[in-house]
Length: 322
Image 1 (cartoon, helix red, strand yellow):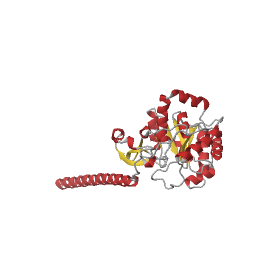
Image 2 (cartoon, helix red, strand yellow):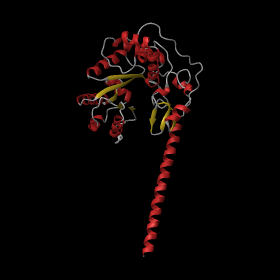
Image 3 (cartoon, one colour):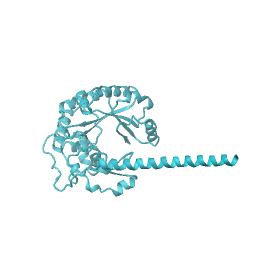
Image 4 (cartoon, one colour):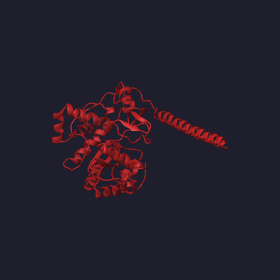
């Protein structure tokens, strides 16, 4: 269970939520920007099934620019060192955007590895509907070229990349694949999000509704304009897991010899028949917030009516006694 945000260290109940999942024998990954981590870390205890995942999009200059706030990188590194000193499992999640320099990314991974991290997750930046900056995301060709260069620089190094070999091979352009949007379902305060956490195409209240009522075939690269450039792990890591089972010899070759970083790339998926984008995330949020506020108002009115009825009954009892 990956708990993301917003910032999940803000809710006061989060330590109990994490412990609740651990008590149910679930692996828990708590994703944080680390700004509150040194203050809140005492509310958690190390567990082999609990991992801090700290958001870091590169070195100090790269990350602080990415989050538009100076000093965040230093706070994150401080939090990593503190968590490791207390015996926690710690990894970073790194999103790479257009303009990322392979050499700087490789140096950054070297620095993080030297801190004793338990893992690194990486994903290309994807221009989803509600991202405020739509200019600095990677298209598929740039994504593959960037990751090939990064992986080439990482050969022989002890980077603990927390991905299947098949997914890394896909990022490097050595095979083309369709995403599996139902492979990493997301639930938030609005309900289960369709079809994945990067797209706001509506919400349903039950997991059965999500799986049975979502038109999964209408999403993904080649099917939907919003998905054209996406190569994010949320949709493609489940595909890679399926490919590993279906093609074990290919997976074994990647495990033994690493990801190929030279030569021709696999053909791109055609975008000729994709349906046009529908920009409805804001409408969905407005609709759901209206429903939530209406339900709150209904409960408040019912509570007030109950209080008034109780007060009236008490008044009648007092009159009878008199």
